[in-house]
Image (cartoon, rainbow, N blue to C red; front, side):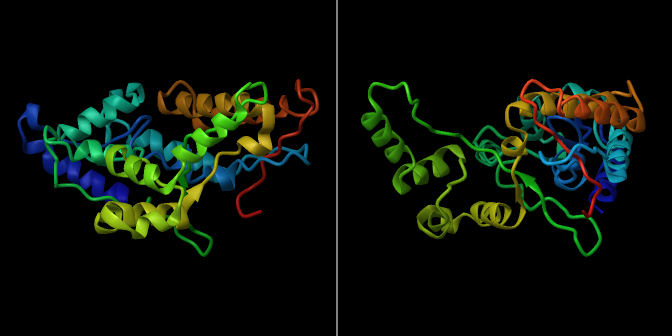
Length: 271
């Protein structure tokens, strides 16, 4: 449904002057790249206990769908957009949809933004079916104390300060950082801002963590293999089927013969 709406927006904008033409969506990788976040947990699930790897067909289909969007719903150069590029296009009013981190909402409401007070925020759409769910990637800033620190007590106090309700509230209001304390969403300025009500729903109903814990020290390599397959498909360098098949082979190399001797397993959707 979202893709159909975006296509309508793109077609409706064709009558505008070239300088006014609106693209349907903008994002760091492609227009609403649902495979990147939504399909990871179901279609490329990691399991250190297994050795057999099978990437589910929906991942191939999602990659094919997103490749079709480029040049139709998103500008051809969207595959080269970085986070700041997407935000700039969005703030200029040259995109109808954008996927980004929470800070982008505050940026969109700055006085110089062309879309100030003209935007909305919502959960990412779900697929059809009884097991469909929202799935937005969960990011964050990790604060920790090194075991080699000679000032552990002071460092711990700093972490307590930075994660306190007062500072988290300030960071949410001024920087767009999502609080980790649920009570903050029901207090003060955050409660009166509809954006934070949506953000709370995202965290409660849709947040999906990256598979960094279960992949362990192989996470960086796993992530590289994954985004390489995605990019090769989006740029047309390889078909989705070929890219995913090569991804399976790379995942096998993260099995018993990897440096950490860990096994990573991808299972079909629904299992």
